[in-house]
Image (tube, rainbow, N blue to C red; front, side, top):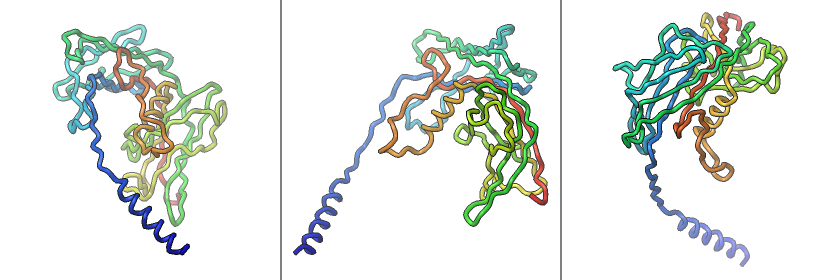
Length: 286
């Protein structure tokens, strides 16, 4: 009887669990429209861009609507630079091609003459970011790590870290092409483990040799880029990546708004950072 009872209980559980499946249609309500800002200033001499768009509904299966006709200015405390929009790139505002950021300065972004909620009243938005100096890189090396299950090159970095709290972003180029070209792929790091010390070949990037875009062969040039970012931008990237990547429902918290340094209810981020680069060529014996 005991055996038959177990079989009966098992069949009953299967039937009950099968009846627990129910289709649920989730309706995602619309919300008010907000300004989205994506902008940065670096120490590179180039055209820098501030991109303005509007938020849209979750199931809006089109590119984000651009915000055109705005007045976009950057103030560094001594000069005000007015960015220009072109017909070819609506919603994108450019500095002059000879513009570059200077470490130690604070850059203030001002956006005006926009009516995001279309109530007939023009709005203003602002943000600011300090541009920190970053130490130069002495050198980088490439080290192959492989087994039957993986094969990748470590990019090892040799540089001094100053004895103050710093935050970094790491990027890598293969033959001049940026591989870490999105926030999801951006590696960020504080200096809690090497503050004030020399980094004797700290692993800072990994090139997966099973991926076509990351695979390198002798003669390829690998460039490592070090960005000295603010703590606010560091937190913004962490929160953004947390929302992008998969969550385990039972152990993760509810979705939350990502932090921003923009005023007046706008979302996104405006940041300034310094850049240092170092390159190496993969040899035949590596």
